[in-house]
Structure formats: structure tokens, C-alpha cells
Length: 258
Image (cartoon, rainbow, N blue to C red; front, side):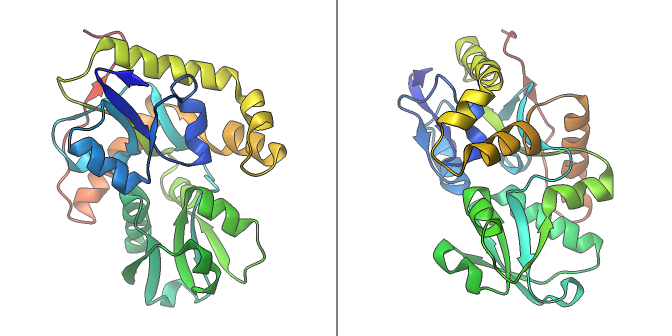
């Protein structure tokens, strides 16, 4: 769909489906890192991006009220490990998502750990890797197989440590260069998606309907409310305080604002 004369971008993961209802025609679907590049190059009017993109880059607004978040387990962002957690020397990471990698780094640093993180992209060989970070559909597929790995759900681990929701992705808009029409269309897609969760679970082809309903309506939360904002602000502070990354103030844009 073209709004503001440019297409909208999203990720090719199950968790994004309820936020793109009615926007499917012409939607650009790319992994988070490639999607971020397309957005920063000015090829997209908005993109459903890893939240770290907005925190680490200037000149970006977050659409208020909408998120891909969790309050406890997220199921689809995991560290699968065979080595004892406190002695892991190396972890292969799916570098498609900057947010998930930095969340892993943060959780490990809180335990006094700093193993080497090495990128990988061959999902078909994930079961052969002793310690691995997976996100999205590949993480779901991994968990549904019988691999001899222990699973750390990063959403659950964050919640244990902070008591706050974790925000993984948001609609990002170029500051000062987006319209009310675009913002309202994105909010309407969220409303329609939440109303149609049962249909989305039944009609989808990825995984089985029972799991889809449990995942879309249970593990994943789609609203940016007060607690989600508190969690996001805490994550932003910790990126700076613990990981030494320079973050930018969070700027929210409402659907109704001019």
C-alpha cells in the first residue's frame, strides 16, 4: 500500500500479521536489518522496525499506542544453549534484529558475562550450533523440534529482572515527513488486527491454528501503554549505562496530532 507516496515496510514474521491488516497490498517485507536500511535510505514511508533503530538513530518518531511487545515470555526470541550459561564463550546470533542482539548483550552483562557474539544466517543448520540466538519464525520452528538445547526466553528473562514489559518493534516514522493519513491508517490496521485475531489464527498457513492463536493473542502484546513506555525508557537507559551506546530521546507521534 502506498501512503505518503512511498510503500510501508514490515517484517516477514508471524508476530507482525495483526499490525498489517488492510495494508497487505504492496507491503515491503524484509528482515529487520534490511528493512531498517531501506527506511533510512528514504524508500519507505514507515516501517515496523526493531525499537533499537529509533533509540540509536536521530530524526525518528515512534507511532504512539502500537508495539510488538511482551509481558513475560515472548516465545520467539530465544537463546538456545548447550554449554552451561555462565561458561559460554561464544554465541551465534541472528543479526537480523539489532534489538534482540542488544537485549541478549544486556541480560548477559547483568550476569557479568560477555561472550563473543558471531553472526550467522544459515537457519537450516541452527540445530547443529551449540549456543545460538534466534528470533521470529526461525525461533518458533527451533522450539517445536527436539533439539538438545536449553532455552532462555529473552522476554521472560527481561521480565524477571525488571518487572516491566519489553518492546521489540514499533512503527517508525521519519520525523516531520509523515502525514496524519499514514498514522491513522497504521492505527486502524492495529484495531482491525486485534478484532480479527481468531480469523488470523484460523486462516494462516504458518504453524497450526491453536499455536497461532496462543502466540498472537497471548505471548505477543500489540499496545504501547504506560508500562510498555516505562520498559522502553529503562531499556534505553541501560543501553547507555551498561552497553555504552548513545541513545536519543524517544519521540512519540499520535495518530491524531497534526
